[in-house]
Amino acid sequence: MSEQPSFPIPGTARGDETTGRYIVTFRDDSVREGLDLLSDQAGIRGLANAADFPESALDLGQISAAGGAVFPTLGVAVVSLEEGAFSSIMTSAGEDSAILAIEPERTFYAIGDGLSLDYLRGYRDAVNNLYEKATTTEVEGINKQGCFADDIESTWGLKATKVMNSVLTGKGMKVAVLDTGMDLLHPDFVGRSIVSKSFVPGEDVQDENGHGTHCIGTACGFKDLNGRRYGIAYESTIYVGKVLSNAGSGASAWILAAMEWAIVNGCQVISMSLGNETPTPSTAYETVGRRALENGCLIVAAAGNNGPTGKVGQPANSPSIMAVAAVDQCLQVATFSATSGGSLGAKVNIAAPGVEVYSSVPVNQGRYDAFNGTSMATPHVAGLAALYAQWTGKRGSQLWQLLTSRAMALPLPNARVGSGLLQAP
Image (cartoon, rainbow, N blue to C red):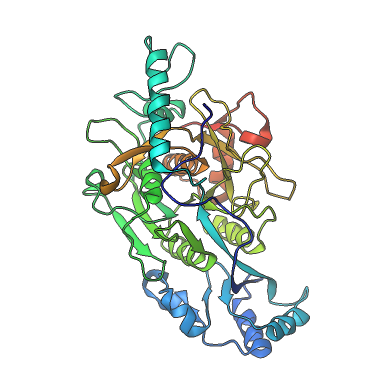
């Protein structure tokens, strides 16, 4: 049976679903001029400004009342525009304009395929049974077929990425996971340094979905109640940004607000296991990705679960956002993992474990579970990036280059796995 991407949410990552608002991207150092242009040409003024809120954590409830919001560190705004105002601004735009681009605000999703949780758990149990039969002569988590497997010491992914050989812990690093939130009452995270904020109007940070808690567990967790290690940067500070609702979807404004918050607060890594299937890169996300790198923050995002014929979607198809593919226990590319597209930057950059990944989930969902997806590969890279940042002091673009240079080449197409399987320092 082939692996399927999994977690308990409805639907799949979709593309080209819009909210009716627009994202305005300003040219470098031109936010003030861009806002003046919006005021002059469209009568848009008095936007909610993230800089006016404590720690730049904008209250998303202010967007409707103010007609939009501006994120000055990112250099973008989200606004409501009537057709006439849109035409007027576009007429004024040009090479000398403070406005670089205007594009529809799209909806993003925790990337999944909508399979029922009962089915997925049954699939997991079947796979585990097969591996138990095949691993009668395991040595350090590698079975006689040369594949990795979970054991009492750790998950297979931590063995494959050599995390278990590393003495680094992520101490002093800040890792932001922008997802469906986190189970803040999960006993495995008692005593951890956690900063949390919901950017989803009407919902608190508490994760009623499970996807966010699972991703946080891989990137920043430690061990389960039996001592099996499943997390990487276990002494890092966790920044929980809830940008997807409990149903698993979210607007760009929510994601951008959390990115502004994470960057302003000095996070070295942002992990985003979310996306859609829009193959054309977003000017806004590419510009934000570049500005994040300039501010010493690396953004990693899931390549997508739309299979070998599907291309990397937004936001991972931005040249300045690291797109993460998934491999299985035998270091073969996962069948669901997206492939590189033809647009500039729309390529897979690196790979990580993404099949049968065991991690934390909300206590009321069983405390632990194993999921599949490029969503599960992404936090592996985020946690490893935190270890490299701790070890070398490198940030932003230098950290990106270090990660790709330290990846283990795989005998697989670059279009599917990029530089290869990331290895721990």
